[in-house]
Image (tube, rainbow, N blue to C red; front, top):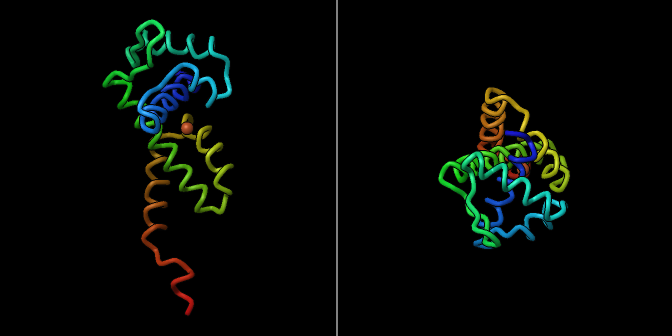
Length: 130
Ligand code: FE2
């Protein structure tokens, strides 16, 4: 699947989590694309059996689509947490995480996960100073 289709899938998942539904209009607004681009992406995602949509209805994720979307979002959140740990400002971390989530290998992601988990367990500097 292309980077951009993963982004559409992720956005549909986020909208359903946040608003309870995903509409073409909202996907277009959030991803800063035109509605026909969303419709085109939905057609591709339907072919891959990742989403369902009745004519003019909400976009729904199939079981397969939900799994994949949750996986992309998980990568996004991990990479954002990692970048924030490196003192990257949250907004930049969010944008960069969305680029990195598509290209890093599973091995690298595993190491980053270990790093973030270890960093979260380590006592913060604030607590050390009295
Ligand atoms: Fe993302």
